[in-house]
Every structure is written in structure tokens, then in C-alpha cells.
Length: 387
Image 1 (cartoon, rainbow, N blue to C red):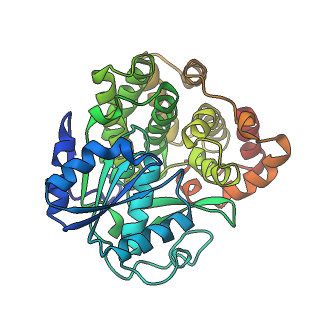
Image 2: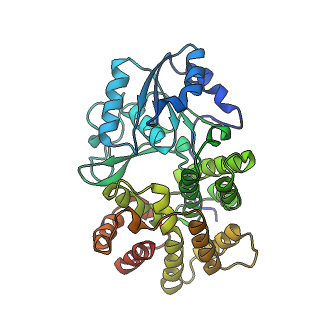
Image 3: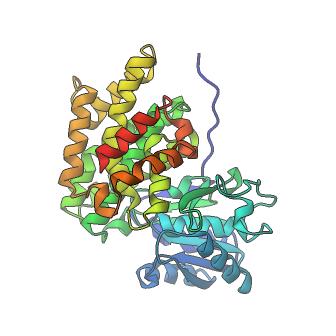
């Protein structure tokens, strides 16, 4: 029997080399005054900005220096209102995309962000539709261009949390692999391992469904094959295209089938240790969480169909039809090492921090998708192994 499910994504997805030429015309379908959210260096978005202006839109640039905070979202809302912006376009990695998505939602809804944030806020639903939002990723990792949430750091509470609503799905996601050609190897690695994690976790989650399964199967194999090539040669357009598509597929999957313990850990770690790149955190935790999930399922739920899915993950990651999960864990560890991902201790985490992080992680929304409830000891073990 097929389990009931729902699939929702961006109203329009445009994928392909050269797709960035459509950003201006598509944005012009939704407004005349654009708040354009970029990363810390707006000059990197200038070619797309020229395209937006050429389409007849007035463009106000709002730069986000790092991973977006609640305060960043508030400043962005003020900028959008001051210029009477009627469409939001975000160009960049997950940080500008999440910031833009949050700004688009909050600019048309009264009150502070904490009214709407999960975990640390009131979690109220959005009363009004967001401003039209167009997402233009320039990295291949987060899949934020097709998700219904924006991750913000709540600095006072030292945790990353989501502003989430079905209304926040972008009006258009424009994915041009050519925009990722200039990414340095370290960013390629961090983002690519985030993409791989966001394909594996939805595939084994409690909320997996037949459509996301198909997306994950394609994306896992594609990312495992292409990421080492994109890392070794950033100008390899075939590898960059595979990674851009894998990231998009991961975003589609996580938005409709949830994540798991890796991302359950990543939120609290990112909030408490702002210098820890999200992708690096996921990369270090992924093989350990897979190993511990498999062991817990074998011990407590030996009839779980997720065990067969974990075996399939092993085959997809390794390309070996006879591979076991233990082999996949070993290959993932080797991949993380070859991509020069540092251990979590390099970002300031210490053994003394683990009990508090495990406790915070248990309350994270992503933990609800993990295929089995992990014990405190298992949570601690996963964190310790990633140190």
C-alpha cells in the first residue's frame, strides 16, 4: 500500500547552462522594484543584477555577510519597505537564499520574526502571502531554491531555527550550473557534502515517499560520482551540472520528506559555533549517523524496511551492487578526508560541549524525520565520533 503524501515545490523551476539570462524577465513578471539579496560581495552578482536592470526593474541591493541571523532578516525587511520593493530576488548560496526567503515572508506579515520562528519563537503561521520570491543559487548544496523554510541564526539563543510555511515556496527557482564554476574547492566540498546528506536523509526518513525516493536515488548516485570531479577541477561543467542538479533534487526531497539526525545536530552546532560551516558539520556527522542508525535499527527494529534502504544507499554511494553499509560508511569517511573536511574540534567543539549539544539536538525539528529515535548515549556517540 502506498502511504499518503503531498508534494509541493517552487511554482517554476528553470534549470540549465545559461538559465541566468531569464532572471530579469521572470522577476519582471512579479514586480517592478526588486530587493536583490546577495552574499557579502555584491559585485559577484553583478552580471545577474545587470540582467535584472535590463528587464526594467529598479534594484535595491541588500548584502548578507554570512549565515543569516534574525537581525539580518529584520534589516532586510526594513530595506524592502523603505524602497517599496514588490519582489525579492536572492542570488548566492544558501545564506542569501534563506535571507531573501525570510525577508519576502516577513515584509508582508506584521510583528517581529520571533512571532513566526520554530523552537525559540511563537511558531505562528503566516497571516499573509509573502512577497514574490525568485531564487538564483550560485552554489550546489543547500537546495534552498525549492524549499519552504528559511534557516536563521537566533543569536541570543545560540541556535539555528527555521521560519517555515507552505506559502514560502519560491515563485521561481532559476538554476544555472555556470554560476557555480568559480566556486573554490573548499566551498565546493562543503556545499557538495551538504547536498549528498540532503539526498540520503530524506531517502531513509520516516516521511519518505515514492516521488522523493526517485529523486534521491538519482541524486545520491549523481553527487557521489560528480563531487570529487568538481572538487578536483572547478571548470568541469559536466560535474558542476551534476552537482547543481543533485542539490536541486535534495532540496525537493527534504522539503517533502524531511531530514534526520545529521541536520538535527547541525542546527544547534551552527548556532553555538558560528564558524563551523554547515556542510562540513554534515559531512563529519553523516557516516557516523548512518552507522549508528543502522545499528539501532538492527537492535530495536530488525524488521524495519529502512534497513533495506540503508543497503541501497550503500550501493548508490559506492556504485558497487554488492556493497554493504559498512563499506559505504568507510567510503564516505574517505571522501570526507579526501575533500579536506576538518573535524568538528577544528571549529571549537570540545568533549565538554557534547551533552548540551545532544540535548539541544533532540529538540530540533529535523530529528523528527530520523528513522529511529536515538538514545542519549547514541547521540553522544555520533557527536564524539565526528570530533
